[in-house]
Amino acid sequence: MLRFKFLASVVPLLAAAVFARAEIGSVSHPCIALGETTVELTPLFWTAGVHVAFTDDPARATVRVQITDDADTADFTVVDGLGSEPDSCQANPSTRLVSIAAQPVDGGQVIYLSSEGPADYRIYVRSKTFSQREAAALIVGARGGQRHLQAASL
Image (tube, rainbow, N blue to C red):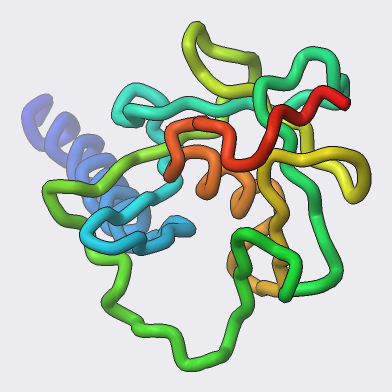
């Protein structure tokens, strides 16, 4: 009888675990394809090779990203619904995983996101699937945090 009670209590837990794993595995994460490389955001901190954090203090930033209202002046543009390739972000051996950390990580980039001022990158985002923070994290992660423009300390 004890075995039956144990089995009866374990089966629902196993079913819940299988269901949760299927849900986690099916969630898509924002990603971009750059040539042969795919850059994808991951919530799994330990799997990411690149870690970025955000700050509200421009003095603490290592990279400045400006949000622009003009796609023509942007270095990186994200717009939904323009016939993008659905398979362009499939995982492959050259996929670079980026995580957004709550606090700066040693060697990780710290992003100051604003709509004005000097910037290393300029982004234009009109998306239902990407937030401005996610787009900034992807472009900084794709470039490995290397500054794109002149130094932003003006």
